[in-house]
Length: 472
Image (cartoon, rainbow, N blue to C red; front, side):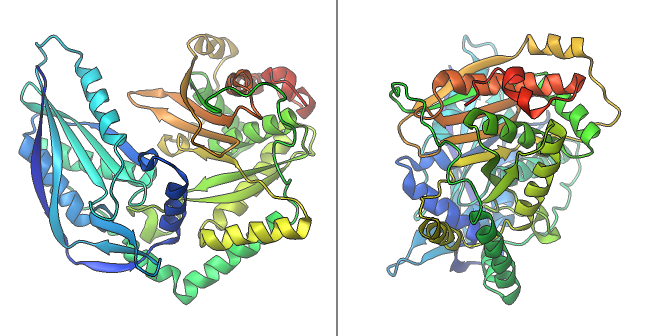
């Protein structure tokens, strides 16, 4: 039988510190308050560890990780005056779970680890009382083989957790080979980031971002879903569909090379072109999740750096290539203005709604986390036959249904653990505006459109027919 035990792991950092929240932390804090279950914002990643390690090797590197990155040993709370404050602990302990399993036993080893991950990730953190970090070590036949890290989004975004996994992988691989773990690049800590944001340089950065927001809000479509579907709304109301594909990755790489841009721009262009056709709009307003890692001091930082930035894409062109060009321009504008106080941006939205006499709804989101796992492929030209064969393995499933959401449309792209040649789409939508059949059609239509584009250029008036979407 598998057995779950717990080990206390002490950590020691170089300092204790307190300070205000960063802009990114403020955005997540606000979002958490809107959700009934704060566990929704937990972030996790899985690492298959090198052979030849002892459990103490893994626990020792967990202690090093906590000592090195202040965000992992930080408490978050609102003080008596309502001010948001973060407190970095100089030392303390965490409880690491260890799942002991035997390969000869009659149980599903992979299923056991997956069940424990779901339980760990599905438990909300008490951010005011406990450090925002959990870990589970899977030990098979006496050897650690799996490491799962779980972090509160207040402490780290997904890109940060991937950095943590890369650090752990490099350290544990070195230890298994009898070498010292490699040095880790120094990065700005969240308390120092909050101080920078309140400096003259940070204020200038935010002022530019707010001017960008004001310009976008003056002409943005008031909503991306002006017409409800007119059907009976199911309960629960918000449905999440998932699609895994082997055809989309080679198609994206080929199209990025053709259009001399990135896979992320191509994917965003396809998304906004389909949204525009679905809703009969000449422009698409979507909030992009921006990583904000463009400066050296933040490239390897561990914290919640991501923020959501409005981008408006003009859809007046004739061909998909025209959409790619306007998408690139819109995305670059958003990426340059990704650091700001979210409360100030929200006030600008309210002001623009009052001035225009219509409530501006910005509940369409796009987040491409797959592109960050990719190396640009040059000179690769998939065949139509190969893409069709890959499409035959595409799988769709419903991933979640809930009443606890508020977005109309949120599309995300992910890599698939253990399957480097696959991409997974996850789309949650409000079925009052996108019925379940349309959610599924949107995901399968994205694949069809991207595959068709590999073989020929597609005009905008063909988008609905090629993708299979109902046009409005």
